[in-house]
Amino acid sequence: MKSSIKLVTLSFIATFLFASCNEDYMNTYPTASTSTETIFQDTDAAKMAINGIARLMVSQYHGIQGFNGEGTIKYLHGEYMGEHFSRPRLTGWYTVMNGHFMDSNTSSYARYPWSYYYMLIGNANTFIANIDKAAGLEAERQFLKAQALTYRAFAYSQLINFYCYRWDDSNNGTTVEYPKNGLVLRTEENMNERDLPLSSSGEVYKLVYSDLEEAISLFTASGLKRDNVWEPNANVAHAVYARAAITRKDYATAASHAASARVGFPLMSNADYYAGFSEPNNEWIWGSYGGNDQTLHYYSFHSYMSYAADANIVRNYPISMSKKLYEKIADTDIRKGLFLNPADYGSYSSSTGVYSADGADAKAVRAKYPPMKSTHLITVCHSFKFFIGGSVGIGYINHFRSSEMILIEAEAKYFSGDEPGAQALLNALVRDSKRDEAYTCKATGTDLLAEIKFYRAIELWGEGFDWLDKKRWNEPLVRASFADGGNFATQMAVTLPVEYKNRWTYMTPLIESESNGGL
Image 1 (cartoon, rainbow, N blue to C red):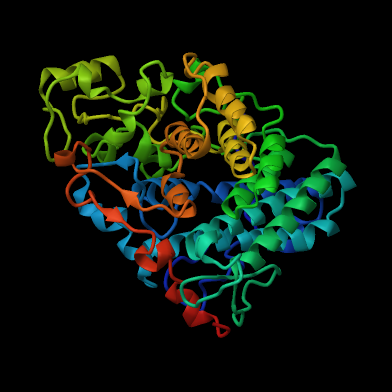
Image 2 (cartoon, rainbow, N blue to C red):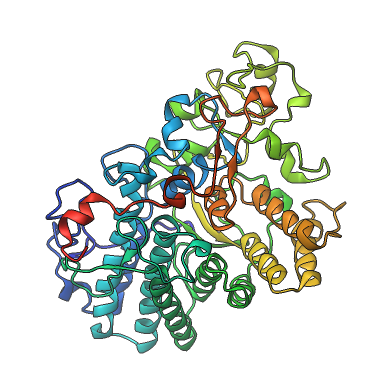
């Protein structure tokens, strides 16, 4: 896993035009000199091409520091806008954290997921259309095509989360309401086709399911294994399937694929849990490369999330878990130790949650975590989950791990009426893994569902699920201010109802509307 991603500059994997120039924004054709024929002359070259898609997931876009591929989806769209993630001093970002941009078709924040994921889709489409012509072993062609199908399914399933209504509001995936509910279904190599209507989430899910069925079949038929954590394999396809199915409320499918996804990926040890979430371990099913030789430095995910990152956003605007959530974690749970316990320290600012920079409390915390500098501010319930040990921004990014799959299966079993099965899975995740050996799940009924949701919140905190989970569960988002016993600044201490901003649905970006005559 230590080797760097080897790739070629492709004619179809080229610099994607995120600018608002509408004529070119979907253009994935070359700035490079390598032709499609050369790329697909054999499977060795094609493998470097598929690695190019992996690299796109950790590249910078929009000419903006914080738009760094999949990392931006996680921290900005998944966490900043959620209920359990607080950056209380970053009050200038309250409009983003409160999702004001969701009903704007010109906002760069609303446009980013659309542009980013359609870029991945365009590259996957070209790969799928050409890989069968590559010279080499049939098993290699099968494996590589399966990877491209998995990328496409992943990208479309992510797009549904942002640009389509939650399943409860979709009339079983049949409704389309331009410009705020639907996706353009692009499955062909030529991404210059403009005249396509929006398709419903149900139609897109059909493609996602079909792609993943074919991918799993091809992975199996190939008999090959991947070499690196950033390469999709059958486990990754099962994981994408499970996540898509639970969002679609297809519980039997979600449970089955979640179980298959984690085969061979045991839960991490407590030592690994405290290792910083920036290096792959046994539990990681899929992640993005993050070695010293290929980094975005201050643009990277970890430069925004690591407690010791030497970046202004970390030093002056520290991140924390919601105090309300933190207080619910059992003292016997090792995950509680990843966050600063306010009971162990003195007073903090009642408006920003920060301890005096030169005070004994802040100095004691920085001494306990020596990579931190004297310029790092300390906040109540400060997060120590993410850590980078090398240069600025160095670190792998996880996309799927076994804990999520257990939680998906538990939720699916609960909704399928198998409460004992859901309880057993929670025991496996919490007690048997030794995250909290004092725990035994005894909850039933709605209390059991609440327990599943609670353990999702603490297990997956900071990994990009917070806002997405609240949306799919059709629950309001409630943040408590410092005055109300929470740790959100007044500007971010809001309650957002389920009907808020198009039912939490991003609008079709103007750049798509202006260039697509089918809308």
